[in-house]
Length: 186
View (cartoon, rainbow, N blue to C red):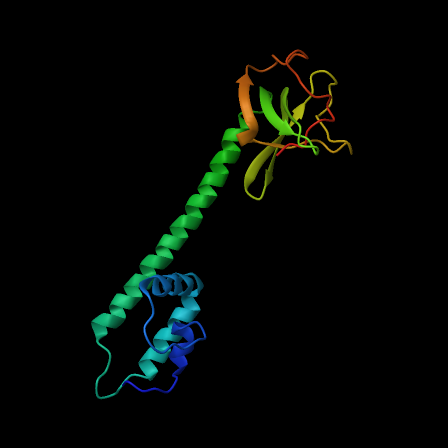
């Protein structure tokens, strides 16, 4: 059923645009990636329904083709679900690992608002989860208060800023750089 008229399915396949002529394989694969990332379960069912309703009654679509498309979509959906589950697992595991830092003395790299870099040493006081990633605050052994910025807001650090971990209770004022108001943390 090759016609030059635009069918409802064309808007789904071509993402709202129609093309005449040939496209390069790079443009074609980029368009496929774009369509794949935008084609959800409802759009897939709409595409399948449109495809079935516009088929040639004298030359119907092969059943195996429909089953194959459904299987591919199911595999894609399962892969997407697995990716989401794994991301959640990674986040939960990172939080669990970070909880073992509570009470530990750590060294972290910090950069202040002027771009000056320093190493701060302190005891991990609290763990927070921000956008699924753990962050923590440090107690300054010199002042007995959390390291804070110039506004008095406690600095938060990510686990990627840690440069060293010492046994609990080993923080001393020696080896600490910064005054407690220096740095901006993670």
